[in-house]
Image 1 (cartoon, rainbow over the protein chains, first blue to last red):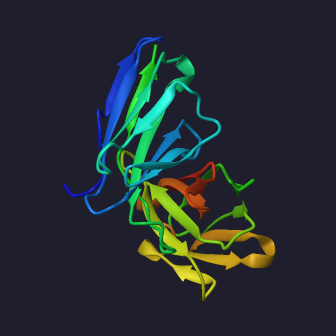
Image 2: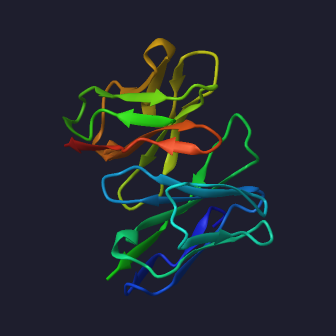
Image 3: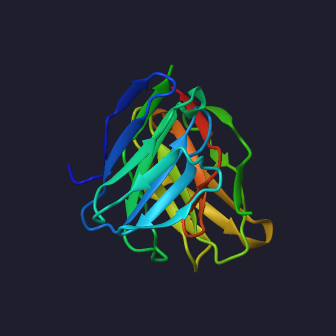
Length: 115
Length: 110
């Protein structure tokens, strides 16, 4: 499969625990995005990288959230001290360098449930 | 602030009916607009996109959308829907990243 892959597909955790998700983008894509989606809502932008540089982070994003893309390939999203409100689908997407014909390819997401 | 608004949250149609889903955006820069679709159990995928030129753009599976600059709109249309079009549809504007609307759930009854 040469698409965007995310791991794990599902994660159940208890409130207060830390969780980490992984995203492997399409290999030649240098942009990588993280979104969060809750039921009945559209994907909400969290952050994005160009290569290893984190270019933007949503102001809505709590300090408990951190993302990395250390070698400009895969990325991880960590949530510390999870809260029930963090329960959502976390989506990763990748694209080629921000050209005008920007097309994002999405992964299947990681469904997080915080009990 | 940039935003995208989709007017219809849930649409139910019978097969062969015509479809129009509304989308309005708020963004002051060069407009790049998208419609994405999410079929049940699948990931988001691009339906069609507008960057410049002809304001009427055609996408996959018989969908089209019209960009009307004066109305800040980018409505999605299909002349005759099929049961397989049952999905969630998201309008989005590119501002350096994609900003999505809240989505419209389309249910097509056979």
